[in-house]
Image (cartoon, rainbow over all chains, first blue to last red):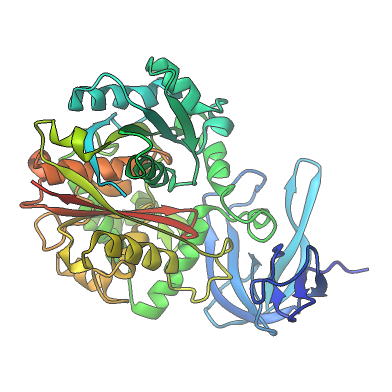
Length: 115
Length: 391
């Protein structure tokens, strides 16, 4: 079963959140945990990006591509990008992969590729 | 609410300091006590972000109050990321303004260089959202880099403008004895020349090495007091006239408008309203230039210049030491250094020094109204302060 990254839909007003928050940003009327997980779409548009050369621990690569992507449903997400020559506005498609290894932990997140 | 005055100030050199964190906090406090001539305070706030994680010392205020032999006065450690300093000043203000205390000491201190660079980067990265940002390897320079690219795309800010901020601030720092960097740099050396890419490599492209502030150790202290106490001293009366604070979304991808710093705008608006002044009334400002882009954007968001025109004002020299509105006369975070918890208090220290007329070679002439902006996280928690000289 392929992994997904989820947005959270308020059961009271339907507002979609990514990432998770305890109280709905739109109606503030939900009870604790009254959210339904909704998988994020994979296709989107690259809003901004960088290549990081000053890397945090756990990353043994010469540089890391990071970007903010606006997905098809309007939700924005920060993710890694593996694109040779990125441009603002480029069409991208995400895959859920391991993005960071902390000791024995494997963290999954979205990595975006050029369409 | 009573009026609140700054009666004493003190600061350490910002550098790599080989003293324990507690001493880095206590030293400027002793300077500030000498400055105002008092021997005791009613309460103590210590701003610090990394004590527990980087220096293995939690409850810093409790350690400092004893080291200064100020017990049994109450003491609290205040943590608000890089805005810890201004937040602590805010708490000090509330204590005096409410009438609860007459004299409150506010210290900001940080010892970041007790650990290596990788650990410091990770420590600062803990400000980011754990699931939506941190796991991807997002660090604070990454967020600044993505923001910079958007600003370059939308408003035409160039690498040259960013370098101008770095050159201006490092040149100002040359006139500041406590500044971390005493290094003269030129636009040619960091942008134009063939060696520029080696002198000024990319950190989080488009952000480069000289666009990021150094990692520093240091401490600063201000002593706040009621009008009765302040008027008994033989010093220019500097009043903390306004405070403002606002928060924004934790992740930067959820910001309403990706090129806006709404929390800065709101916090600045509040502080001006409370002080009863307009942005145009400000004579000197200390903005939070952890990354050079931030000085440009903050100067727009607080209302000094129109949105998208901050870099034009910078080009015209309006924000230089001799310009109409000097920004970061101390060298800012870029030149003076950025011991995270100390910065907010160091900004206040500089403004008070300027308003008193004691800033020596970097004195802004006739400075009467000063403003500071302390930027927490990446724009998700901002505290702004306004100071007015009354005598």
